[in-house]
Length: 365
Image (cartoon, rainbow, N blue to C red; front, side):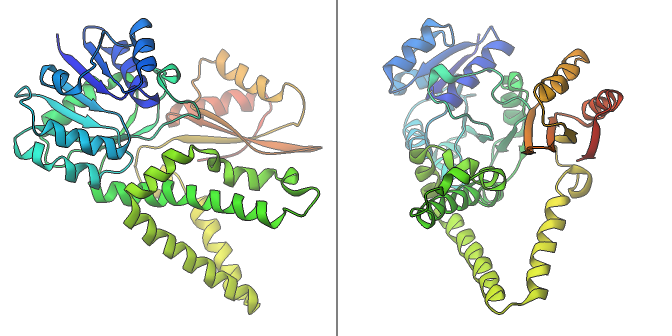
């Protein structure tokens, strides 16, 4: 029986434990966490088989070690592991949100012949802690694999261990990972938070203020509700790249501010046209064969039970949804409902089911 040690039983660590338990009931799961309540809950609910109060004592007994803490803690853990005598075929992985820092910290361990496979599941929740863990948290989410110098056999072994997550695997280099998540995740979080803070100050003397915030404003600032402590740590871990990307974004804003001041219609029109073309062309059909989600956009009437009717028809047809998003709902105007599926075939079947029920499909992506 193999033994998996999970260091950190927060949302991600506990969800991985549940997914492993579901796919590999024979695996012995050992949990380690600074939070005694999380450990007690994990053991009482059967999430883990045993508690490790001493990480240094538990690590040499493990066949797989999953580091599921913040990036700074992961780096410290990798340094500690490099000083221990581990099993010859041990596999070490992590779930950190940046990878250059982690893989650099892993070098002493790698020089000793230990297989270290960097990882980053692109999934989360507004909830935290072991009690928030869900076996299906990662389903259809992207999971970055950053093997570094690890052999393919180690990558395959990790993928088999985590097959219960039902993720979409993406293999990248540490630099590729950090630039991708910086531009597509870290920078947008800064932009969203900055817009919310600036709007709050700008409308501070208005009796209506942010009470009017809806539609587009709420859509593009949704991620500003993320955990402040976590995002402070993420930005510091990916500091050089985020700083570079923020400078480029600021330059873009400055360019547009100048165009507005100079009433440069040509430049302003080109600005919005370029953005529209790029945004409209997001998706695997146009940007390549990268594993992605498949969307269906349809009009739904603004009336009680409309969305419930759509989802009920999909349930009846046994079609699995990844996500539902209301793009626009206004009085006396149809709403646009975005339905996301894990594969094109399911999306196309859903389109047939809904068109047969007289729903208007706006587009597919």
